[in-house]
Length: 333
Image (cartoon, rainbow, N blue to C red; front, side, top):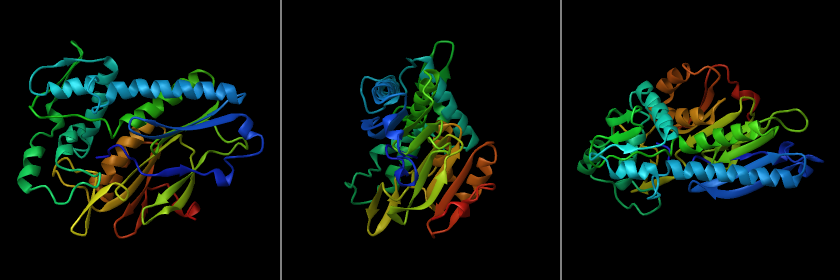
């Protein structure tokens, strides 16, 4: 599943993002939130106002981080994890709601998407420290602790309960997309007409460039990460990429993706990059992770259920596959 990093996807200043007069109306700030790099751009009447609203976005993203983080001991998610197999934990309705949406994707994908994959973090490390594969026994033991069916939501008492000792949930495949959506909605409610919230490649945009054209993104070429293989006008608001080429473990000359198949306990194979476009960043986030695990055939079938969403996939043989209706050849460099 998708962890902290969500594939480097960059906004294209070189093709009209920085236009004459536009710099007087916008501010962009790069910061660290939710354990990763965020870039926030706000278009306002003047730069002071834009900077003020960037502060507001950062405050909202920080609030969500303290709601969803499983690596901060004081959060509700960490409390739920500590009480796995012991007792239900009372949590905010907001956490119940995002957990319910996560379980919707789990049911829809038959477990290819599963926030309880977090139990596998102990045996797979993608920080350069792994020198050998976990044993089959270790993988099997960890998979036994994974299973969205054992995540119990009690809406009456507002509690979450993980039924098995050793279970753990994590929102790395939803959290940043959710935060980008919340921040975008907040800015729109405050009358900000245009902007970009980029949470480590989970990108939510609204409005358009000063010339009336949509924001434009470049999609990183997984075989040549310093370049892009496509430039795409972002007409539908959000885009997220899941990829296996930047965060991985290389053992005995074999590269293992950080995106884990929850059913097997082993890294997903076949696809090395999936980019999903659509209205909701959170949904794009969940879909891109799910497609990486499902593969191109099942992934395209899943995507058909989501009206208004499209994708570009790259497999490990260098083939580019786009969903019906998405004409990649129009934008390829």
